[in-house]
Amino acid sequence: MGNLPPDLWPAIGVTLKLASCTTILLLLLAMPLAHWLVHSRNPLRGLVDLLVSLPIVLPPTVIGFYLLILMAPHAPLGSVWQSLVGSPLPFSFAGLVVGSVIYSLPFAVQPIQTAFRSVEPGLIEAAIAVGAPARRVYRSIVIPSSWHGIASAAALAFAHTVGEFGVVLMLGGNIPGKTRVASIALYDQVQQLNYDGANAFALILVVISLVLLALVALIRRNHAVDLPRLR
Image 1 (cartoon, one colour):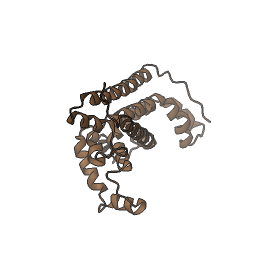
Image 2 (cartoon, helix red, strand yellow):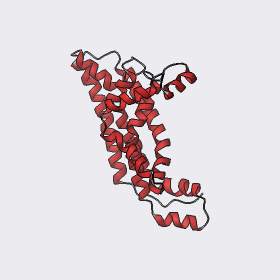
Image 3 (cartoon, rainbow, N blue to C red):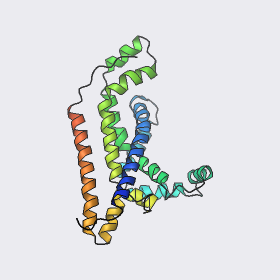
Image 4 (cartoon, helix red, strand yellow):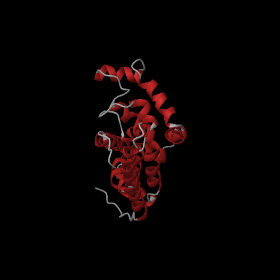
């Protein structure tokens, strides 16, 4: 690899920063949402579950296009953001984070849903029987018993964000040091016929993805969960 692109590490840095911010926000959103989807009897639960799963089947460019419209300065979301921050949401790092959270939401919610469903009902019933409030049951029993699903969700969401292309291209464009992520930079290198540069980006992304997938496999294989205690 003798002809490495000068923006190799800045683009990798933007990618890892985006994936980290997205994963943190996704966990904060996905855990209560997954809990509601598992336990709620609201008639709208099925519709919400369908909407959460929609990014799995929608083309990323379609998601990016509609998010771009919603984030435009004349749209309600874009207008509120611009009035608060003073700059438009599209083609900004914040816009990438919003798009990435929406695009990767099912990859965080679904593993946590599965983990919440697997929590031993007897533990929850026993805690409720001794008068433990719902918040303490959630914090002290449901979350510790579901740590493997939460960890898998974090790894999958991070990996999914690292590999994004269509959504980030539609929402962020290709601004060096700001919105140019590794997948976009790789595409640029191919267009410039710099295959050494493209190979450098590709190898780094492959290594990151393999490490994260190995972590998910390890968690799923070895998730011996200790019985949690009420605090």
